Image (tube, rainbow, N blue to C red; front, top):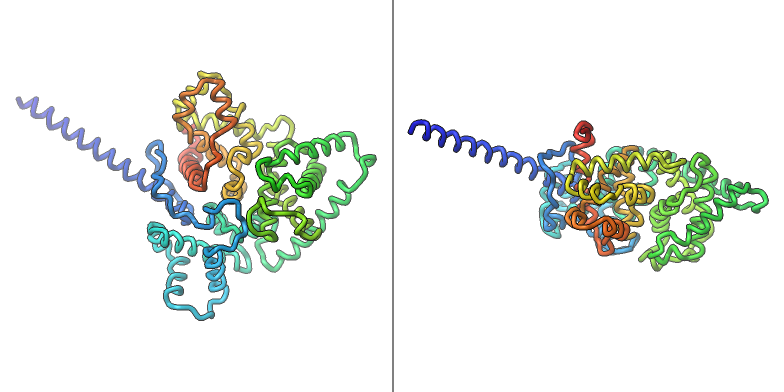
Length: 458
């Protein structure tokens, strides 16, 4: 009897310990979700993320705090209420002596100096979300208005999305095209834009008789690819737009002989073109026309696209050299990450004989531009550019998160169905919410695996 009683007691004690352990794991995992949800609502990137088990999809109802600016479709420079309010707040930051009521003044102090208050605001309803967005505008403005921009602070803010009207300036800074020192910025941009004009004159505006056979073939290939660029956005079908793309791509290719032009680079110019055009054109991208711009403005936009493309690709040179070894290396790492995160999907794809190169090569080559709606691309690229030199490695986790969005679906498909599905992913109706989910999972998995490479070992 004593033995039975002792065994019963021990069993109850073991169950109690298990329940306590599970409770601890749930507590840590919930903290992870709160960290990520806070990130999506505009707070700084958490320094550490506690992760104890494979994350389930976040509760959709908890991600309603995104900036209203980011919920619009295809408008990069519209002047709606929230933008006007944001600019008013920006003026308050730049003119602290300007009369203001106590409520606004207190809001400014608490939102810029106290992360805890920002966290509480992020948990409120729609008005709370708007207030949080306003707080982020203030933070952006304070960082950008300094004599020297502190890039690390700018990266933390930009990771969660950049207000559209600030995006051109922020992208130039994040890529190192515009210098952090505001006194030098205007002069550097003027010099770089003139340098681009000289390159176009030297390499592009010449007769074919002065080009080599390889250069003629490359120019012809670019001319063929430009009309195929983002075909579902009518703006890119304008002849003047395609001519600008052609000038930018050919000039870049001539100046970078190690890779030259590679199909896919044409896609990488398009986010830059849209963002820098938004400084001059308003409304929907589909309503834009190059004929509304002066030649000087077009030249400046092309120059900014050229230099920003150069800065972006400087960090991933071996992605576009012969045999594109950089992409092949990242595809292999993607396969390993997916295997560790979701072994059933990895096993099923392997059993069906599907190689990751068959679908993921295009993802790395075009940075998902062909996979998601174009109006989401600039938001995605805010995070890309905020990652800086770490972008290539972080792409692995973004693409793993993107792929595993359809984990259950993928396990039900045979080889042919997998190929067709991955070539035509059902993202046409995606909004910023789905994109933020992909980025949040990528952030968690990157925090788990990248700092512990042994987790990827056999």
